[in-house]
Image: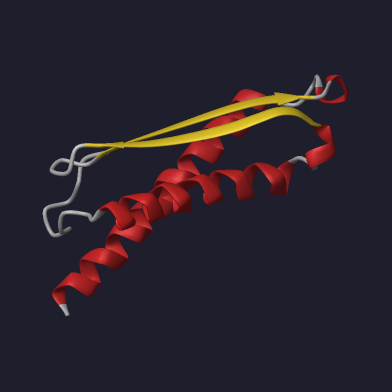
Length: 101
């Protein structure tokens, strides 16, 4: 994801918060669709590279229990990644608004 020009350079603390926001959004989405007891393995990694432009990489690994074999895991992962990017966009928009104050 490329950074919008109105967004200031992020501090280390802001980068950490951005990662937390993205991870939480992805986790919340998956757990809203599948109960934790139906998940065999679940891992979310969020990486941020560069400052200008800012590149955000979200990786979601999800393995559901055999009881969920007919569930579209790939679609769920794609939705979770999209939710993470939406959360990142919102967070960056908030920072941009605060930097203009």
